[in-house]
Amino acid sequence: MFMAILHTLKLNGHHIYISGQLHLQKEAGVKNVIFHTQDLCFAQT
Image 1 (cartoon, rainbow, N blue to C red):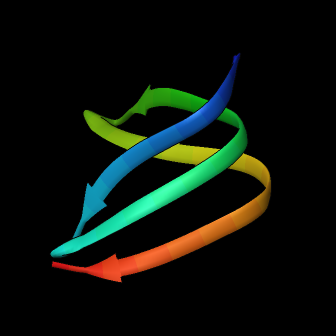
Image 2 (cartoon, rainbow, N blue to C red; image 1 turned 180 degrees about the vertical axis):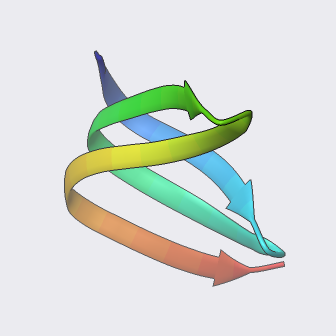
């Protein structure tokens, strides 16, 4: 796990801005995103 001041992901045509702790893990060949955050913003692109 690592601390991220601002992390940006793109999922299903959306940009996801995550502030806080972000944990990435591989499971069954699929990247799962597990996050603890105080701020989550979606911006469609």
